[in-house]
Length: 280
Image 1: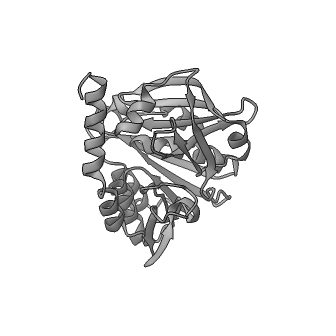
Image 2: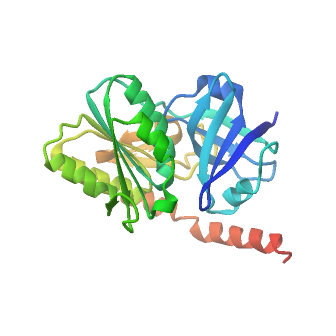
């Protein structure tokens, strides 16, 4: 069985949105879950968080950044092209409940998985405060969607081209220091950003959930490739997560494991680019 791409859209530089026809996945999907895709029989398997799903249409939306060989190949596909595998939904869904005030923090492409959570927390009756950030205004994604799903939306850019000139943690820290009562913080983005968020919330005792996307292979917990250390215990992000208590995650170990195959990934990308350009 193959999975047809029914929409492909460029969002910002090297970031793309794809809608894939996958009715079974769409029916079962919940915020916080992910899929593992394979372009063809020779392709590697990569995990991508579900950004949206439409049961009536039977579609699942993924948003990804072109970084390595596989995402570069994925970015070259368009509507009517097909994927060999689209496995999911995988992972434990987010624990969406009525808490009071929930702050959602999204960095870069991490805004994509934050978006369905913002809608779900809002629908559950919470006050939703969203903080989204990017290096520059032209790299912000889903701004209108996040605005519609939030009671408050704060925008941050590293270069000051829009919103707060600085990091998402600046806005969060000021909010907490000013006495804003927050029942839960959810942070999704680069590991260094999520680690910084947990550093801000820990002194205030605010529960902080992070979504981890380590190296994954099969997505079922069998291979052990996605192991992470949480509270001193080994957990598997694909079945135990991807969401964990951010105050207990060993981010240093996570980031060192993410760098294990960096040389191989770089080599694979160079060979792919060389082949595309007619080299050997």
